[in-house]
Image: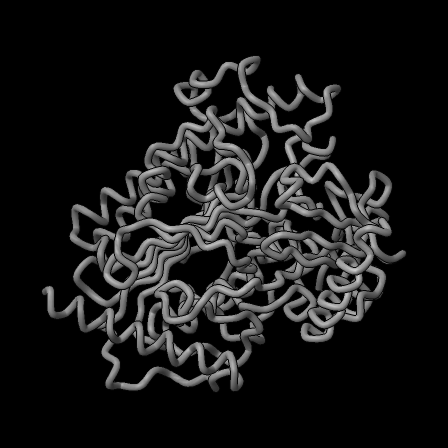
Length: 493
């Protein structure tokens, strides 16, 4: 057994070095993996992601490089232990920080204006090799449990197999945030109910799947929770009782007039997080009991953050760190060891698919636009100050134009945030000196050279991603979406 682990570790190092050279010379052409790389030599993948869990509400280790002090109110012992054994990307960025665009980029490794899901409630097409299809080609079993939200306006209907992006095992529904009265579908058009708090029931289903597939083909399991997305006060009572609203510490960028509202929201938000912390623990125990933890890539992350009254704002889509930064922990003891460490290089949503494929020793399809950073994870490649693109192609829903929503493009580097809207430069923050983003340096004479440099970097990034930065209505017209005045989808073909 020991020799097998060493052999796999060496295999992964070779694969990651190959991935590094691809980054310099061009992408690998997509093909099924060679027969000599047996599927029995592949690691399992368990990818767990929450909805609207911001980086500022995660263990100290994964906040360390962001400049935020440790939050004494967060109670996540299982997540803390996971962080101690994981590689944490302290600057994990949600490229287009809202539900459907993130999920489409996760599934395809593409940017929003390539896959076309830059609004909520539009359907992801099948014109790219999905992450499930890539793992299927390598001989994996694939599974999806929980919130899907990639099938258009009907959030509660049956999703047929041809619209599941290749996932074989299916226990999912489009979207609901009624966590205590939640439903799902399997392979038949029969609505089934998650009993109790749905994240706990979904976690139980994930544990069952892992037990049933232990010792067989490698598997890639995706578990998608709805919490801690609002409504905030619907976690089970035992978790809500842990948090006393008036004693909760607020970040410095919450205006005083929102103090009470922020504390009330955070009490419920943290209760959801405490429940999900238990869920993480249960999955990790299952992997350990089945002797799978060393040979399993375990990822914990989120689709985007939540403003929670920072800067007087709520929800997501915004370009501030509370919206765009998410936790991103990767544990894979066989190849990465158990000594936790933090990588402060930004990693973006489209980078997730190629990085996981690289870490699994698989080729990256040439439909992918993101970068394979598996070499950074295993240490064969040095972290670089990757410039992560952030965008809002067309504001909608909870960030309507009438309440400040606007198109923007920006970059989040290890140190800086720079953002343009359609009128020109909008935001510039030195996040090292100003971690709460209270001092906008945009258009100041003192920082003109910095702004010009970052503006050039952003322009190059837009060129690389074929983004002309047009008004949102132009993209809506191009993709044939029908929206109301707020930009919210009312019909898609």
